[in-house]
Structures are given as C-alpha cells and as structure tokens.
Length: 404
View 1: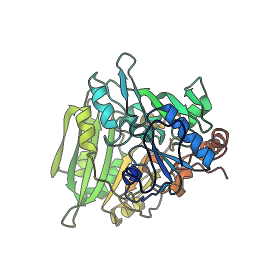
View 2: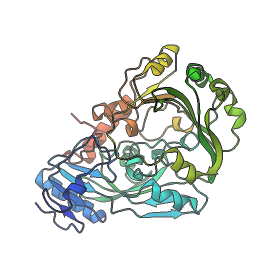
View 3: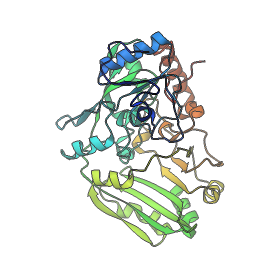
View 4: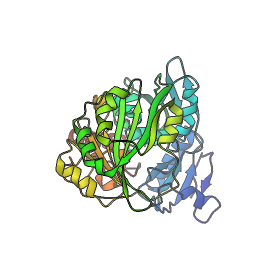
C-alpha cells in the first residue's frame, strides 16, 4: 500500500521504523496498524485521509500515545509528532501550536513572556489533551483548556482544510472543544494564555488517621476560584497509607486554606512554596515512564459519609478527590459535566457509591464509557455532528462517538 502525495515517512509491517512508530505511551495497547504515516503538514494529513477512504481503512491520530486506548490493528495510524511548532503572541496572549507539540514545549515559550497555559503534564500532547477537555492547574480560575480555544485549523474527513472558530464552521468548532478527534484532524490550535508568572504550589503529607475528617472538611469547605486543590490517600512503600493535600494557589491562600489544613493536622512532609508556574507544572506532574492505564474516574455530587468510607477502604495504591467548579462550571463546549463539584480518581478500577455515572474524557481509560463523559444533550448533538462531518466513519479515535 502507498499514500499518494505524502511527503513524510511511511512505515509498513516488517519495515524499518514500524515498531518504533506503532509504540504508544499507554502500555496497555499493543497495536499493529496496516500502515503508519508520519505527517509533516496539513497536506500530508489530507493525503492520509484520502488513502484511508480509498482503501477502506479506519484512521487514528497519535502524537505521544498517552490517549491511545484502542489498538489500531489493520488501520492507518497517522502520527503528528513531527508537526510540533509553537508560537506565542505576547500582545494578544495566545499560543499557536501544531498537533505534535507537548506542554513541555509551550510552558517555556509562554513563561518567557510572563504567561501560562492551562497545561497538563509536560510530557502530554497539547492537542489531544485540549480536544479531550483539558482540566489544568489553573482551570478553576480560567476554565477548561477546550473552552479557551480561539480557533483551529482542521482537515476534515472529506479532505478539506478549514479554519474553525466562533464565526466559521461554528458547529464544528463547538464539537472540537471536548469531543476528541471525531470530527477532523486538527493541524493547528490557537488558545488563550494567562498572566500568571508565579504561583504558590506543593503537596503536604499528613497522618492517614486524619483522612476521614479531612475529606469531610473538604466537602464543606468554601474554596475560592483562585485555589485548585485535591486531597488524596496513597500507599507507602512499606504498605502503610498516608494522607496528602495538593495545592495550587494564585495569590493569597493561607487564610482560605486554614480550615482544610486544620483538619489534616501537622504536615509530616512537604510544603507549599511560591515558584514560577513553569517550575510548579513540572513538579506537580513529573514525567512518568510508560505504563498501562487502568485508573477509574468518577464525578460525585457530594461526599457523603458512605462515599468517604468507600474511598478510604478502596483496594488501590492511590485515590484522589479533586474539587471542580469555579470557571470550569461556565457554559462552553461539550466537555464534561459542568455541575459536578467533586471527582474521585483511583489508580485502579474501584466500585464507589454515590457517584453520578459521569466521567471526564481525558481521565477515562475505558472507551466503552465515552458517552458518559458528556451530558445526554451534548452527546446527542455530538452524534449528529459526527454524522455530518464524518458520514463514512473514517476517523476512529479511541474515544469514538458512536452514531448507531
């Protein structure tokens, strides 16, 4: 098989570069595509889409492979890692990135101008993260990454190269901001940056015996939007357990945090310190080696005692309870459940009572639960838009919007 008018490297099974090309960061996936194509620009993406249509192959897009959940066996795997340009406009406070760029590329480019993106882990691809919603360290103050996209260049399933924004192809623009890669291949994103140069951030560890009281205090606490916090429990190397409190604060924080930290008791390790945002983003999400994604993620409308008990009894190496709300609750694209105040994420699948059944696309490793990442109304609209923009079902991302 060949791809006409494709300028980047192409790899076939058994050939040089094939095994490296099929690799995904998510080690639960061992995929064997029929062909791997490494795009160098939008015209290559167009050519790959044409080849997929002509040969009846499903197409999946991969940059880093963090979000790859379904092996693309027998299909066309389009790699965008070589398209990694990043441009920052400090006057407009925007970043313009290609689909292979990582947050590791955007963080220093923004920091040079005293700006910050709504970043995830530095090793994660910007575009995949953003198309999945993107809940970052500053999102309670500034919203989801998807809701701060200003424009996108998209190669559609039928091979058109379009500019989508609030005025041009507004329905496609809405779907992209949380609907994953179901509606086209994004070859450029433009999104807002924010004037955040330094923050207070860190993690403190506390006695596990304070966990139940701390979660109850977390539930009842009035948290300002300038704070992004999580409470977690984690196993220690010797088999014990500890309580952790993670904090990211813009500006004054000590008074607001006092009730939560009083419940947690004295810190046994760790601290919160003022530091550049770029430094904090790297420290809070250090690079992990490739692993198999088996976590669970659920939204909760409250933290009643029965749920707190289940969290503390869960057979998992770690369970994190995060506060949502703030600017993330504002209307925007289809990403997420805007009215959910809490989430519970465990390192392995656990059954928990009193959760809503809703989830968040970036944190959901089970592709069978894709629909649960959206409200019923948003999912219904996404299904109609999938039919309109990809009627032949050429685009097959891991989080597939099913139309039948």
